[in-house]
Length: 132
Figure 1 (tube, helix red, strand yellow):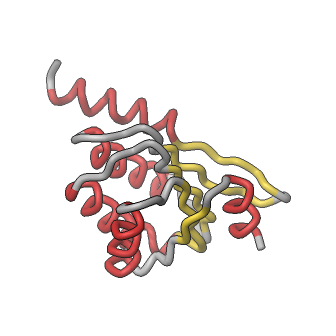
Figure 2 (figure 1 turned 90 degrees about the vertical axis):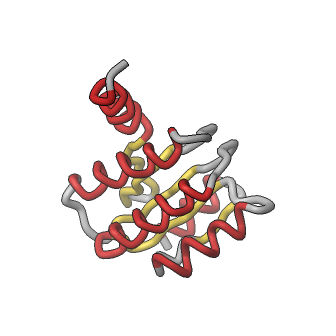
């Protein structure tokens, strides 16, 4: 498989992992990073960021789902860069799947990107907070 084919595979998967959901009449951008690990995780973060910025939307309410995923140093770095790049178009960010050491990673991303992402245990709690 060539590098170009790998990039195309990541782009196609990123398109499937990002969707818009509606809750109480408001649009929420759902970024599905469930069950990712290794080098695929930061590559997915980069592609989903591109899709977000290409949407042209502002004041985005984001729901980031990292349940079952394992973040490396490279993944945290990718989220730091993505958070900073998305900050101008982001209004609020909720995160699912933040347990144990992932809390440290979220704190690092929040400190670096100033995105202010808040962890939640359930998708319903996260959606309610986003639209309030």
